[in-house]
Length: 397
Image (tube, rainbow, N blue to C red; front, side, top):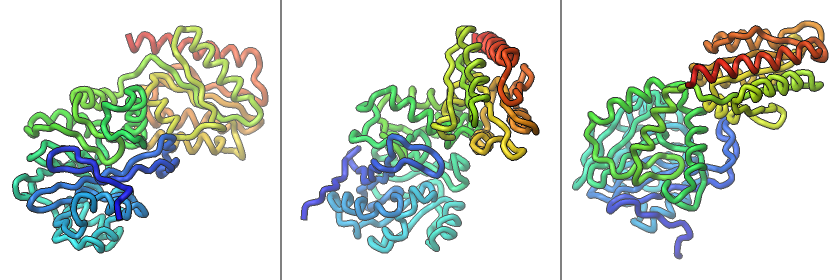
């Protein structure tokens, strides 16, 4: 029977055998409006090798793609570059189906696969001969898990970069140069902001060390999103810029509101920013979620957070967002805390404390209105936005 799922050849000896997940919209708390891919790759050499697998439930599709190139049971080796379940969820079933000679992972990857699935693996060395070609392994610990590594197939110049340089983007085209550049740039920025941002120092160190590895890269093949066959310098430079987290002359106002009091302050602050000539975006947490916020944070040099008090605490939606943003460690940001309350007033105080803990610069004092903001408080919000936007313009000259 003819397969409906075909492999796609990406180099003389390497085939894409992954899966496009058009339907996924939530990736462990990350909104994936454009779906994603789980990329896996088949190397045809003396030792036929599968690089990574796919998310659990998609293994039949992957095996069907493999079968359009070779019978799956002819696979000799499987290499797991990253043990997170979106890459390894199908691994146990694939091992049972193809019965490979060996399964390889990093030292931490071997322990992780054992803990997740009871899978026994061999720990890779610096390289692995496949016959005519070899795989070289690049340790990328904490990019973005302790087990993470990249693999480089020297015969065809393919860098299997696992999560690095990837994005959550389902598309009918396999190559990045066939996809709209604006979509790619946004999705890569969003992916970096929500997955890699807190490891930016390690990204810079890897990029600095990369030329010394002497890898003749002809293709970059991440585990999510499109593959790259040209413009590598642009990809590396984009990652370097994202890692540097230089403040952009752009502002974002994030707010939650119950009876529109905090919303009024948010709009007044944003008007002050706009009056200073700085682009500003307003995010209402009633209709937005945390990964959208973090993407905007990464793209902005000034971020204001506002929320009311509820049950002597900050409003829950804001607590969720601040916990998420704090864990991703944004740097070099101007900030502003504001909110409204009826009697106890913990909301804005909590926001200010969290921004201080994140080392945001807070040149303007926190603003909190009781019940409904007065004209004077709205003016203060406007002036705070105007002042901070002017400071941002100076910082980003």
